[in-house]
Image (cartoon, rainbow, N blue to C red; front, side, top):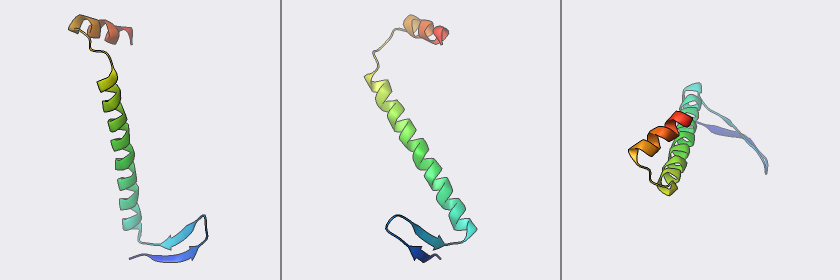
Length: 62
């Protein structure tokens, strides 16, 4: 259970259990990872297609 302790136009102070706080932190990290994956999928779709040899050369250059 959480309770709002203080609220200003820019911040909110809440009281919650450490278990719930840790869970919120995990969900935030999962959200950030999902955003990165989505961006990489869009980049992969926009990248020019390559043959196997071109892809291997590109990987070797990295």
